[in-house]
Length: 95
Image (cartoon, rainbow, N blue to C red; front, side, top):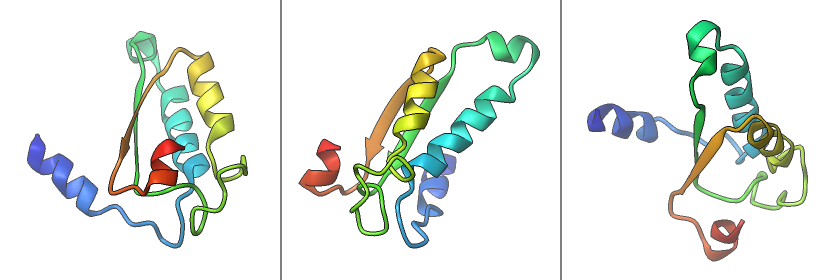
């Protein structure tokens, strides 16, 4: 439903920074909470960001912000991750 997707994107707020770790940890939590047949299905994460991790993009090398620990856990559990960058500058798009 394109309208639902657009509404969800319009509701996204940075609230003072871009915390990849917090977002990806929520995905880990949701996927780990699957039960029964649902737990046997392939898992996908669509990660949407408008910038590099940190309050002002300064935390690319900080695992508390950059999501590196969570991405490793997801990949180790055969989760497919797609990324979508919205209006990223060159440095953030490379990350």
